[in-house]
Length: 128
Image (cartoon, rainbow, N blue to C red):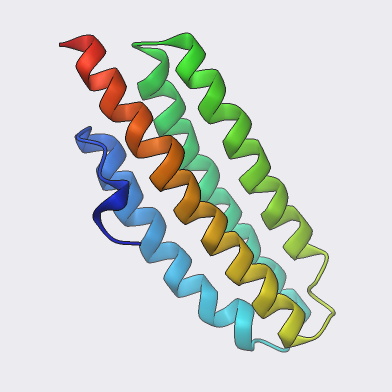
């Protein structure tokens, strides 16, 4: 998750950095924790951080283009559903959680590369 998420919107880019810090922290708990309560709490933290991040992006996009905000909202919902599905895996094997976390990270990277960055760069051009 390198600079492919840079959008040229300071608030959004700052949010990306905070989100990825949280995801890296929570990842260790999700992959190694054997206590369902702690695992559920870690996933709740991750989901809340993602939701806050998505809210910033959607608000920023809505100031320029309502359709762009809708595109983001739909993709964000799909990503949050992935976290919700991970919550159902709290009592399952570490291997299953590892696969689910890898899928989430891949989906987030794809989202940033194919939706966020291009969309915000387009919005920046549109606003200019």
